Image (cartoon, rainbow, N blue to C red; front, side):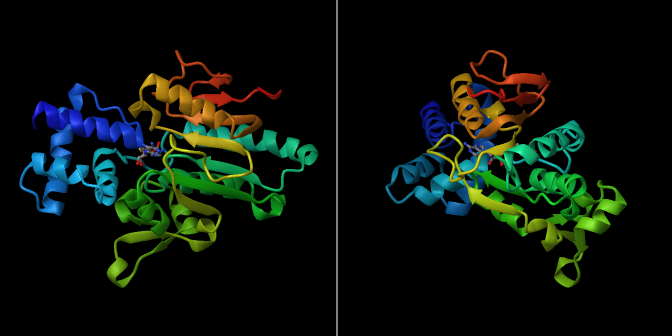
Length: 277
Ligand SMILES: C[S@@+](CC[C@H](N)C(=O)[O-])C[C@H]1O[C@@H](n2cnc3c(N)ncnc32)[C@H](O)[C@@H]1O
């Protein structure tokens, strides 16, 4: 890939997703563009760059972001967050609920990828806030990628992915595929009903949600952004939390060095102050 082509791709990706591709990502970009060249049947990266410059290339720009971004995720990734939700966050909010009269416990999985994160949260909430608790819950799930969101919505996972969960959890929350779905598991519709999915670029405009959240999971996405973008995003998310609400970030995504108004509760767990910020 020529220098000018790498520069063009990296600028375009930054403008559309704020994903920062450093010089060390050149090989990775070239490898991932291979897929797009095959899909568009273009013989060279130069011609692919020309396609991206045409006014009708909006769809292809979305495919490019899909090809470049990393969607790696798994059920109960960074499990301490789910323990924290179950043992501390929900009990604390449940006590406040009596006074605040929040109609529901409201969570946001802000870069949900193929859904393992919000479904893990859903299983957790189903256990610590069952229907008998009398306080319903809902999870908004967003990602920039249409393609990965379609996977999250479909909620179908390979048996070897689901097999890592305890047998009782699989039995309660998944249906085993039959016929053409043999070898797959699907999240039960009852659990899925408490999740909504929306395509959203976290750095563009305002999220389409009115109510503030008790918890926002924004994990393993900020790592791809520069400091300035991380700061903008953290402050944007903070405004979307109830006072005393929590922002959970990936354990490799410290907020050190960026200006924000959150209190660190423990590594990767931040809290909006109770008084207005
Ligand atoms: C590595 S996955 C993280 C999934 C999950 N949060 C976890 O921790 O396992 C990162 C996700 O961020 C999404 N993403 C990247 N840039 C984004 C942006 N600007 N707005 C929203 N989502 C974005 C990608 O499409 C990808 O699905």
